[in-house]
Length: 241
Figure 1 (spheres, helix red, strand yellow):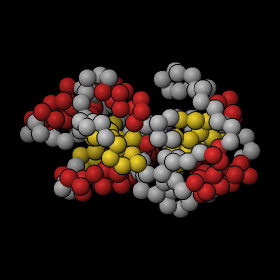
Figure 2 (cartoon, rainbow, N blue to C red; figure 1 turned 90 degrees about the vertical axis):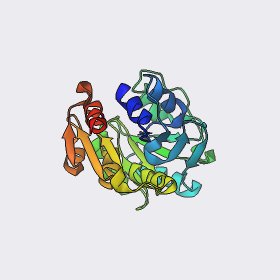
Figure 3 (cartoon, rainbow, N blue to C red; figure 1 turned 30 degrees about the horizontal axis):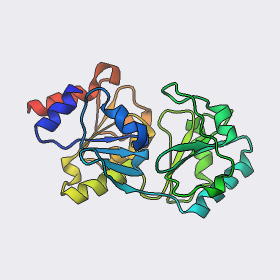
């Protein structure tokens, strides 16, 4: 928190990039007292200006492909469960709620939807399976997704699918293009496979010690784990130069 705020006070622009949605996620990002210029949520699917509270962009699926995707997955995995991110809430089918009753924060999932075909403005789709862990499920889900769609996981028990352009690397590139910053002026931190495109795009990429192997391999350098405040160590070193 202190390192992030010190970076902003020195004139460095800071964006939080996460798989979480702006509703709930933005407040969680700042609950420690850290401040950010932007909140890039849903793995790059939307961007919230933290100063103005304006949702500057939100990418969504076309309705028909999004609903056909569910039918395609169910043709192979009839026990799969699904969830959908709408503009202001998350909703789930019965299977998803049975397989994942609580969020990572311990809150009960309650928003069940009956007719998923009535949903519009879907920004992210969740898929869960009772026996296949998310890391292995990714390879299966990719076969049913459009080639331009993004399939990833952020350390949860489900897989996340976002529309074309809705990945952290592309989202960060769009933001930087708008404000006149080049990739070689950017430092990015990551720990999971939904961070890979961002780590690949940034001029300097750093993975924490407890990151997945794929993030460690693509990053330019490693820092200490999150429990050892590895990100703060790099920021403090940057500010000291």
